[in-house]
Image (cartoon, rainbow, N blue to C red):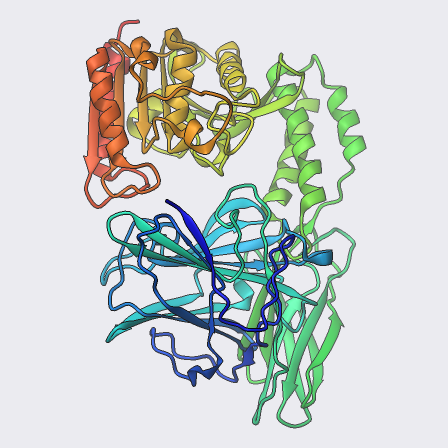
Amino acid sequence: MKSIIVLLFLLNTILFAQTGVVQNLKDIDFLKVPPLIDGVADFNKSGKEYFNFVEKNNDNNPMCKISYRLAYGTDFFYIFLEVESDTIIYRDRGYQNGDGLHLVFASPIPNNKVTDEFYVLAFTPLPKGKTSWQKKFIWYKNKDISFRKLRKTRFATKTMGNKTGYEILIPWSEIPPFHPWLSDKIGFNMCFVKASGKNGKTYNYIIYDEKIQSEQSSRKYTIIHFKQPSINRDYQYFTYLNKNHIRYGEKISLQIAGLSAKKKIVKLYSKILSGENTRLKISSYNVDFKKELTKKNFPIDLSGLIPGGYRFQLFESNGKLVSELPFTILPQFDSKKSMDRLSKLKGKISEGSFTTLLFKLQEINKELKRLKYYETAGILRSKLLNFNKILSFAENGKDKLKAATGIFRRAYISEIDSTLQPYSIKIPRNFQPNKKYPLLVMLHGSGQDDRNILYERNGILERFIEIAPKGRGTSNAYCINHAQDDIREAIEDVIKNYPIDTTKIILSGFSMGGYGVYRTFYEAPERFAALSIFSGHPNLANIWGIGNNQPNFLKEKYLTSFNNKKIFIFHGEEDRNCPVDLTKKLVSLLEKSGAEVTAVYEKNKGHERAGRKTMNKYFHWLENIIDCHPK
């Protein structure tokens, strides 16, 4: 039985039910120098605090006392946790399943309501000698899954006696625009996950937030307050650009915030480098620092720079590089004029190319509106240039999209509601229009969309055309909001526009996409020649509470159509997000129903991609399907 315990270690803590905000947390200390990150505290522990909420997935989980201390420096944010445990339990996705933690940096909004602008960072301790993407990364950024590595962040753990230390140092430069000297307020939350027994996990929160791990969800936070900095020698400062992207013709300025042990003028100079490392501009600045925090703003000379990606480098007079700040100059773009140009091409290029260009224009407009001032825009700049390039070719009678190979995004107009709907496609590099190709339909996992599942691979996959439908959502288990209609229409669109062997359509998916394979095949079993499922859950939609009475593929009544169907299934033995025991049970039921199942289980694998040996076996299985399978 799951339970939530409120722990009031701070006698003056005030709880606000509507926002979940805990006030009166201690102001965090300023550290003049960054601590050594080795899992051992280098400071007086008198400033430690305790988590306010504990949530157990089972009442029998043991309680574990955990304290933490927060601090900051000119260039970093610092966290130290002390866990009263003499062991670290290593689990797949420890940041989610224990031992591990995740934390939130958020942009507050009025009345401290939940926010859509934040980072969730995740940390998982690893056994000695093991490396993994799970150790430290950005889990979410502004509601969307990121999985970008924290390359400069340092994280270490150490067990001494009956206590274990978790120590983290995060450079402010890895989580823009957050910095206490440049941000009016910073929201914060932290959740430490302690494992116990075989499946026990206990969540320790500063602010209880049932959505802290959820996809496409806003986050709760408390406001953290920072003590004023002071130093007794030299000087320290932090630099930012007021914008990291602009339209051509707009301006950017350099922001510097810092202080000195005594009044001092620091001479700095800058270089602007192009993407090819060509030095384009050199400027100099005199910054007068004082004992109290000083903020300065300097215009940057961008004259003569054309649209492109650039790096602003700042140096001290001795030649020491102190910061490198990327920025993008976007080309001028007039959406109405672009639409007028595109409208004139209707009937002159293929219907699929016209619809895809219409979608591209729609997406460019959306991305321009939601782009944050602190974000670079290299991908968007490429999209703008590519769109104009394709448009220009089309105006000169060349339909570049129709002849494209590799991975790109297409769109169709849905018969359901007349909306533009995208899907990703991969066309073999040696594509031959007069040849029939088998089709591999890939269903993405939760929190992601169609753009994250197709990869450039050689070998057997070069014999396929591959598509990845979006399914009209990122976390709908392919059950609601016309997700099944989208899969069907995407397949129909690719059949309409490419030479597909409709007797050899193979359906594949990872994680949520694995359940999507079962669900989609159940909807239209006559369409697919074979199925492949990677780390899928047989009853995901009902576990998530999506829709009403969705199929549970652990019940035999839903498996009759799988008779004689060839199915490849992979699952990691250490998967805690989609338990392997459920897949093993399903495999037994599928075999009982008459399906031809090839099941592969990998030890020491969690909820992740299959290893190379398994993938080679899968590719061989695919080859047999397309070479030998009669419809």
